[in-house]
Length: 393
Image 1 (tube, rainbow, N blue to C red):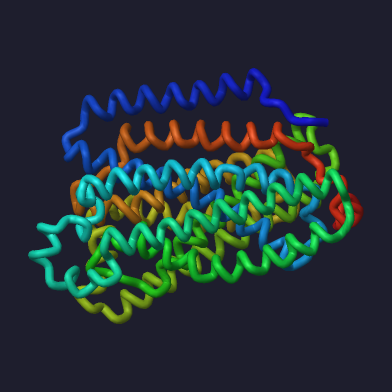
Image 2 (image 1 turned 30 degrees about the horizontal axis):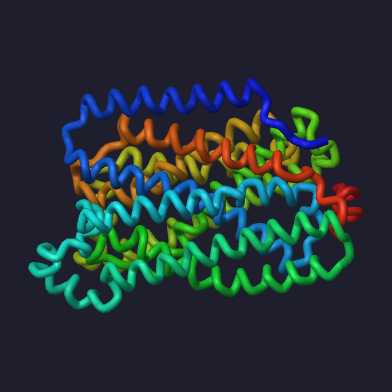
């Protein structure tokens, strides 16, 4: 059965977008901060968050190809659907970065502002790496490789349905392994450029892995909820409880990975207690204490407590509630990566932030659902299809 976007789903998406517009109107009317800086930081947060979730799905697709996993074939088109946002998200993200660059950093990247750089010797010492030209070279490489790999995986997957055989599968196997090599480097360096450079005086060798863990968890939540949605509405009847269980285990595991990296990074800085290093956490704890620790506890405790049992990992309602909550709070995590570095003690998560989130979420969901209509939901010629159809535990 081919997928089509139902009228009810379209109404829901329009409703989310409409709510976003309403929040933005209220946010603009009540804003007391620098409008340009706040808008650009919000655009950066949301374009990065949704792009990183789709890149995480692309990573998960490559990982399953490279490890020759059999169980995932039934949900392969679901993974491709989420990864389909990569070209769109890359374009939006590039446009946001371009606007920030033309605004000399827009108050977000102070190292792009010549006046600020001329008065800051620390930034001057980093200028060989942190300068707009080299920044854009790296950004073009990151985004270009992500888009190129996605297009290749998608084309070969659809072509395999037409001609069958194992040649295309083994090509995806090799490309998957190659992507993992690139991603092992880019997942950290891109985060240094796009997020960590906001707090330009500070750095952490764990930062890239920490942000990636959050993106991976967000991506797995989207994959799980989408698989549950398709199964519930009569599509992909081949999805069994075992497939849902496996996806939920990835949500559970990546939540623990994120928590481990959060604690590891925090603990090392707390133990060393060096003034110029702990300033990153001092700002977030002193000025955003409630939301900072609430975000950490919810992203850890909710999946740990509610997804621990076998039954919970197979229960659609539990997965929906837990998934939506931790997805939102990983978005909050990205806000806390950006807002304190831009606004110091004067930042907030208000109507404007919620408005942009709703608009981006509606576009993100639409792109994914629309991608699912472009190809059959089951990869019928995959050599591991039979193993996936009989996946049971």
